[in-house]
Length: 232
Image (cartoon, rainbow, N blue to C red; front, side, top):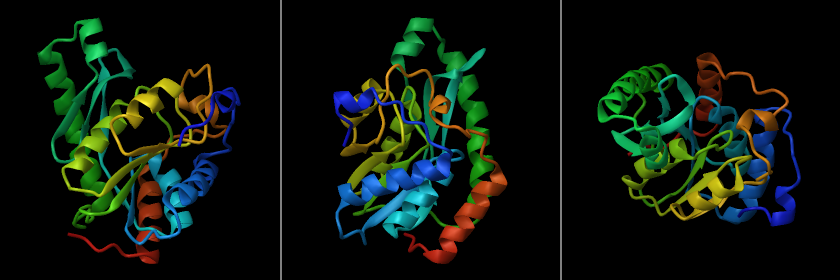
């Protein structure tokens, strides 16, 4: 569910991630239909968690995390050469890797560093809580926006290993070409705004401050009290 060409020209700016999540939740409620007892919302931390918390509330669905880390180009970390996700899934952006001549040794060095952060976040956010049950469910992957899409591609690949019935990517804003490319790799992309020109996710938020570990834990605890998840 992507906006029309005319809608892409509308430069929507969200007040913050919570408002973006409420808007996204409304779009998802229509896309998923009235029956949603098989829906699981998985947030990509950290910025995706405030968005996903509102989405899970709108859908009356359980919320959990899919841990994923961008692999940034050394010296230009905002540019993704790829991404890592839970379960050892690695996705590389071959255009960036080939275009910049990034060596396998450099990729391994970046990956080792990000794997350590992935493990730290798993302990910090989930503790000993078992992973959510994915098999046979409609899984909604939520982040606060897309740029290259590498991080979300890794997340989708990781989820596929669990045997979901359907994988839906849901983000408040993304470049049209990224959203359309990703739509060919998952079952559906729900994105209310694909404005052009697109220079970065943060430009479409008034408040795009960094989400903290404490905020992530608080939002998860609130969601888990509201709707405890049945795990595998």
